[in-house]
Image 1 (cartoon, rainbow, N blue to C red):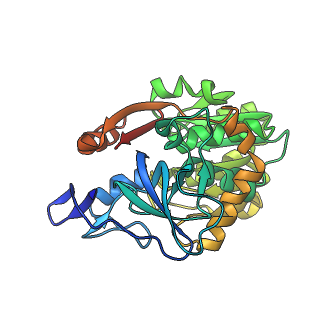
Image 2 (cartoon, rainbow, N blue to C red):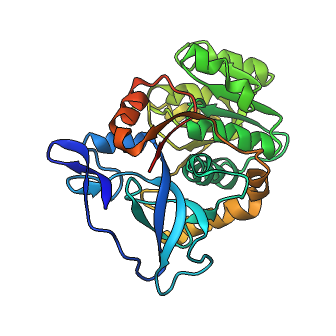
Length: 322
């Protein structure tokens, strides 16, 4: 079958063997895939958790139809339209655990469905489960113009946040954050952004920061979080290392939480998907929670899709169709 594989000369389309489902796995006939930042790194040879390196079929987010079931797979049947996440998504067929997928709503096409699994699972876990956001609280989403960032703001608003702040260093994208739930948009590259957050919160700071930047904004985040607030470290687009004011962290008694799917067990991931289905799936079906598609590429042009992502001028998801 056709797949996008990282090889000795970089990432390219090639032929690989069609996989067969085992145990609780489902074989999916892929119709569309969403691109993510981790995919971009893996096209350059970076390792993401246990995935990456020579011979890796790339991709982690897809929508399609159930083609075959493993002997222990439950909850779906052949022909069902589904979306989910896992490794080796950029291919005509991929495998997924039966607990790591969602049923595609009838009012949603494959391209739209392919934008959602990673964002829903990542940000429900960050905002609701680990972030413990309560109705009436305030939240700042660092890196809000990414697909997962846009979803985080929407989930926060849906769960009753009284103030949602989003950050973006791009003026055009920052100007559009209100369309996705932001009450205030700030530029995290502007040293004055902390003062803006404090002003908007009566000098206290936000209850929760969901941070996709890390690196150089770590100490600013501490200043912008209220006493006994929470910071959930989801991403490190601004760097994996930086100065950290331990005294300020202690003085403000901030609960600083790190999350990643890379070290989660399949049982933990199944629980995250189940929580999404229980808590916010009605809002997905009603289209209250959705992501814009920036551009759609044919699978044969997947290299151009990654060039578009690397240019970093898009808002919303980049999708590849098979």
